Each structure stands twice: as C-alpha cells, then as structure tokens.
Image 1 (cartoon, helix red, strand yellow):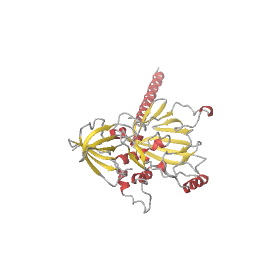
Image 2: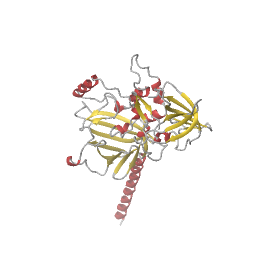
Image 3: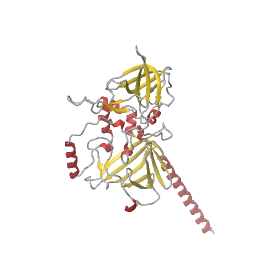
Image 4: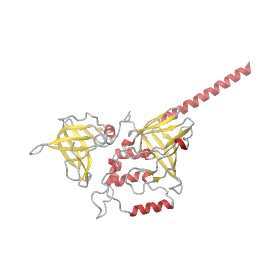
Amino acid sequence: MTRRIAIAIAGLAAALRLSAADAQQAQDRAGVTGFWETETSVALITGEIDKAAARLPPPPPGAPSGGPSPLERELPRHVKLWGRPPYNAQWEDTLRNAMRRPTPTDPTPITKTCSPEGFPAAMESPFPEGLFQVVVTGAETLLLFAHGEVRQIFTDGRMHPGSADLWPTPLGDSIGYWSGATLNIDTIARKAGPVASLPIPGVADLSEQAHFTERLRLIDADTLQNDLTIDDPQRFSHPWQITIRYKRVTDVDRLIPVECTENDRDEIVNGELTIVMP
Amino acid sequence: MFDQTQSMTLHGTVKTLQWTNPHCYLQVLVPSPSAAAEWSVEMNSPLTMYRYGWRPGSFKPGDKVTVVINPLRDGASGGRLIEATDANGRTFGNLKTPAGGKTQP
C-alpha cells in the first residue's frame, strides 16, 4: 500500500514537473507571437538613416544628375543581405564581368518597389511595410506579411516533400522544430535569383541548390533574433552567416494591406520620375 | 525624384486625402493670383502612415492646411511630405515620433 502511494506521489510530481515545463514552453513560444520589424526599419522610420544620409559626402564632380538619392546610397549599408556573399571563384568572375558591362540607367528609386519580396529578402526588409506577424500553433508557425505572403513553417514532424512534389518557389519549403524557446527552421527549394529584387550591384544571387537554416529566438521581451545561414554550393565558397534582429511593433494590431497597383501615380516623364495628377 | 536638399511650404486647403496603396497623397489647392493651383503631396503606404499617426480622416476636403514638402526635381506641382499642420495646429509628420506619430501642439 505504502509503495503504491509512493508511486502515485512520484507520478503526480512528474506530471506537475511536466506541466510546469509545458507551461514554460508555451510561454516561451507565446513570446515570439505578435508583430515584428527589422532594426533597419526602426532606424528608417525614426529618421536615423536620413540623418546618416545627410552626412554623406556629395556625389563626385561629373556624376550624372538624377543618380541615387542620399537615402538610396545610405540604406544598403544597413541591410546585411544586400552585402557581398562569400561567392566562390567562378561566381566572383561572373560578377566581375557583369559589373564591367554598362547598365541602363534605371530612375526607379528603391523606395518605389513594393512587390512581395520572397525569401530570404522578406526576413530583412528595411521598410516599415515589411513588418510581419508571427502566429504559433501546435503544428506550424506562420509568418504573415503585409504584402500577402505567408511563410508556413511546419513543426509537426514532417520532412520536406519528395522531389516529385517539390518545385522552386519564391518562399521555398520550410520545416522546423522547437528546441526550448528557439524555433529552428530548414528551408529548401527557393527559386533561383537575386536575394533582393532591387538594382543593387553584387547583391547575392542564389541558385536553386541554396539551403537555409534559421534559429529564431527572443533575446529579450521586445527583441527577436534570427541567425540565418545560407549554404549555396553552386555559388558560395562557404556558408554565409547573417544575424538579423527585429523589434516588437506595438503601433498596429492588424496587418494593413500593402500592394502596388491601386493608385500608383509615380511615372517617368521626360526621363524623370514624377507624380502624375489624379 | 524629390529634391531632398530643398524644402517648400504650401498654405492652402485640402482637396482630398487619397488613402491608397502603394502611397497616400494629400491633394492641396494653393491660391494664386490667377486660379488655385493643385499640388500633389506624396506620402507612404496606408500601413506606414497609420503607424505615423495618420488616419483616413485626418484631413477632410476644405480643411485649411500648411504643408512642408521636398519639392519634385522636375519643377512640377508636387513633392514628398515632410509634415502637414491643420487649422488647430495639429501636426502630422512623415516619420515615427516617440508620441506614436502625432505631434500635438
């Protein structure tokens, strides 16, 4: 009888411990839910990047008028994914040759670009429209973007689809698992092409073989960190590791839609981007 | 597109606030000796302007407004919003302020 009571008590204690662990786990995961934006977006909307742009030296004499604005010159310094990846020798040559060719002048400023960014660019949007909402369920974590994109990260134990059921898409295919309060994400089958759909020389160009891992975790109540590693055996000499931080967004309680076509009044007239009358 | 080294102040009345994607616009009628000239003041997306404290009803047709802009480089009647102040002295900016976007007088 005493032995049975002891077993029951031990069982109850284990259940309580498990329950406490479950509660902690649920609390950890709940912490990542909500709205997030990159630290670059915060610096942009508070004017810090504009102030840095104002301190830039003027364009060199003879530079064509209508070139990049100070903001367009400053912003790329803040976005890690727009930096130089560790290309292998073959792709360094490809890039060097491409840079030697004259490129047509594109007067479209980067701030006019508003189409969905795809992965991984969407994870490091410098613009306030790039904020995203994290929703955690038992079977998947959803990253919802104002442009309408949804990253589905399945945490139900499934593997990536087999080759017959898998083809490259702008977001790729993501599966993940939780280790404590960290969401580990594995992504493949991302459509080949530049990381960013912006005319930035040298921005990473990824093959369909690119393999992405992310470790997403809170580092304090209002800061989320993403340790992103991109391994692209066709392009890179070694994996490219980037850390992106996000700040919690508290001034919206819903995703206000963003899209390009409703009332785009910016047009190029006589070679200059301008506003056309409604 | 915009001359960010220059700023210009417009005094006029609101024709309409276009609360639209990809960008919002404040259409302002500015009196001139001949006839009122219409200026187009470009802002950011509704999502961003909402975060800066703007709402679709922040300005209504006929409201008096003072607008500071970076003018268009091509000299057309338009520019990028820096801030707009209504007849009650309430200022709506184009950046996020500690107050949540809206600067009270």
